[in-house]
Image (cartoon, rainbow, N blue to C red; front, side, top):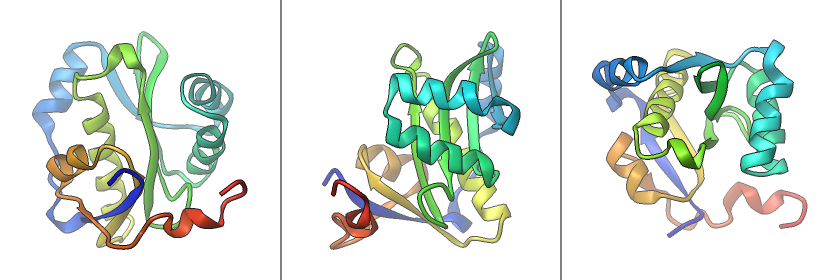
Length: 157
């Protein structure tokens, strides 16, 4: 089911303060991305993920819809919303060496809470890869017949 869009009921998503405290104790800081860091953040995304994701991340930063994780002053993960389209979550990624610590889940939750605070009742996770992860983390459910969905209009698709 990779590539399907997923729907999240934002009013049912809950924060996880214990996860954030554990990450913070391990030296991981979650921050809303700032325009002053555009070059550094988009270079990280381009190097470790893709140029297309870096472009989407730039949009996320410009609209205030991007969170980053950093350790020791270096970006180790990112998550965006309202970057591809309004009400969409993604792209998101964590440096391979930093995975399986809960960083991706913490970034996802920060974005979901930000979307709810912005007035959204639902979020769409666009072209979701790890369907099981999103289902477990935020109760996301697949949207039927959503492949390629809104992404079918991109150049090269």
